[in-house]
Image (cartoon, rainbow, N blue to C red):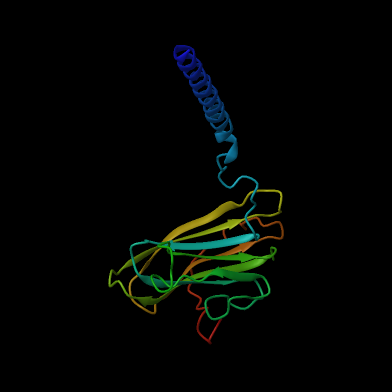
Length: 201
């Protein structure tokens, strides 16, 4: 009688362990099958159009603690920069102070326009403050144009500027666009035009 009781107890334990093991295996299999669908990989900038029509960007080495300022002027508008962040056409979206109050190490400034006006555009770079003492400081400058919301922005101008002393303001580009946002042939030059001073030409 004792032998039958022991066999029944072992059989029950075996069945119980088998059911638990199968339930656990089923749960693990479901998790493994669902895992790729819980967080699909992100696509790089797909479906996110760049804002604005004329996009002006500057960047400098992330290792250099310097406050470099972007100044832009649209046709018939006021200059836009750190002390005047918006005009009729342009807005300064990022004013980078170098390492000061910066949670990232990215040194980058950008201005966007709301629409395209035909006429001359001016792009200046100004070394406001140099905390790194690593002069001359190279700054990359680019201009892109997006003629309508349906098309991607197309880079039309690109250059590098060397800033040699604190307070230096350099004209990177002066150029003309037509009403369709096309670069007017032969209009690109860098004749200096101060934008941040009160005496503007």
